[in-house]
Image (cartoon, rainbow, N blue to C red; front, side, top):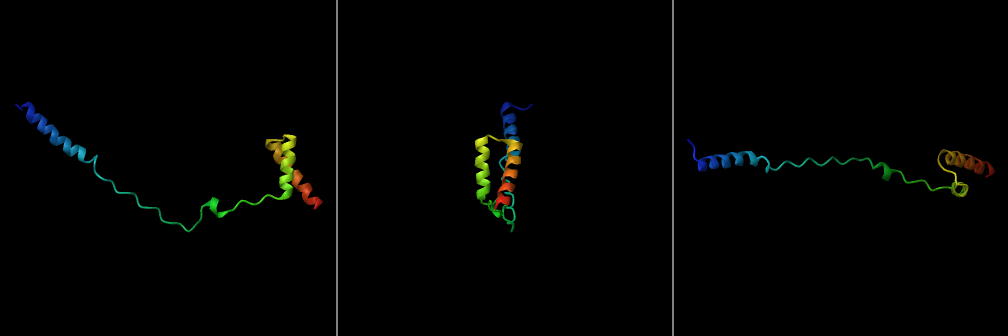
Length: 85
């Protein structure tokens, strides 16, 4: 029959084997290979807005146009501004 101290010693040895895997170092994942492509946001610079676009936007703001109606209004306003030029 095992004594309490021998059971405790056996449990301590068993726990060392089980816990050692928890403290093992894992390999770091390899760094991603550098790509030659630029990020989509960095590749394209935003277009500067034309004067006609800014004027149409201000007009839409004063009229309180939003959503699909604003998009339709802006399209018509820009077309009319191009035809006047």
